[in-house]
Length: 112
Length: 113
Image 1 (cartoon, rainbow over the protein chains, first blue to last red):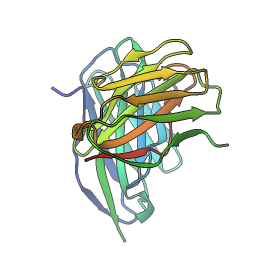
Image 2: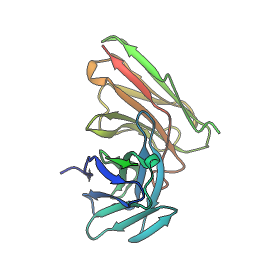
Image 3: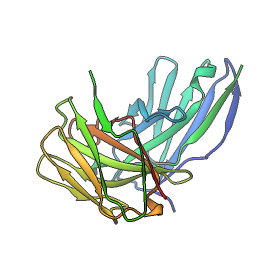
């Protein structure tokens, strides 16, 4: 079992819709959870982080964490073509808070 | 603000050649990391330095060495390049460990022929 799992996609949504991206992780002791956006040929860019169960909102982005289910999600409201990118989920594993483990990413395509 | 600067951006090596990838950050971060990114494999940690003077192996350290030259600089060396090391290499830094996330450099695209 991979430590951080994501559906590779592509996830295709129409412009203006809500995009829902999901991630599961293997270690119940994980403490910190991150979402990065990576445009083709570019480096990853941090867009959200969450530490506690529940929802965290920042503009059009909402991160959701459910530690009991070992599940993290990212919702993008009013999706725009400029949101088309690969979204990487990253997790600190257990007590090893000095490094991140990344999922393979989900490719999001927002159709105009 | 330059953030995290990597050099070179592109490199082609012949099998058996050596090279050093350079990384420098100007954010006064304590922790620095080297990852490689391959299609279908995601980002995999090669080496990291939690603080100046320390380095530790990550998930895929074989064939690589690192040097934390000072607080700003963290270099990655390939002593004898192999085609399996063809990849995109990213350097990253964080304030203290990973709990605040990373800032990534722009990457080095390395091809070994």
